[in-house]
Length: 264
Image (cartoon, rainbow, N blue to C red):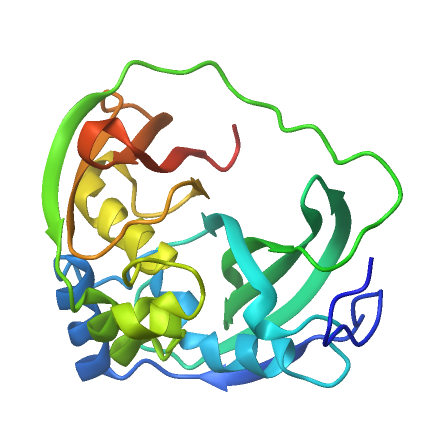
């Protein structure tokens, strides 16, 4: 199957890289929008913001086969190898890899890395769906770990303007997040929250359940969070590894996640 705007059937093998620095005032605005306290470390989701320009440059490059507005963020995994201290300079790099068949199209990984003078510091893997193409083969099976008991640890309102506020600090002005009018053009009744804002806000609320470094945290995005709405964060007990979930009214599943040590 071929989708309008499809420019090819394979991913580019070359990525992009550039030096990046943290602007302290921008970092503070990001903390405020996402609920992170100032612990003198970068929030674990912040390197995605540092590399967003590189990500968009790669995904809109003529060699990238899929149209940007046809992409759906399914999952996101972050690995924090060492404490995210300092303001840089860092070296950010972005590449795409691992094109796989999916029940609804194809998926690929958008892999982002942050290096400092000592080497790899942080890595993010965003698993992305494109519906307009099919590949032969069987989609890889997802290995689901046993579910842990969860209890409510936080509750918050996702305000109507959070999509615009997050867009201003993240640079991500996807129209589905900005207003009801622009979201309706893409089939949503109202604007929806950015998936990475949902993840960032949840990691901020998990607080000391997450160590300073040496861990991996992954999420699977489920039902969109329509704005405005209230959500509840549930998590397993404090432990080196655990699970969490973001749910809406009547238990609507918005996001499921887990954390674990990198050496697990």
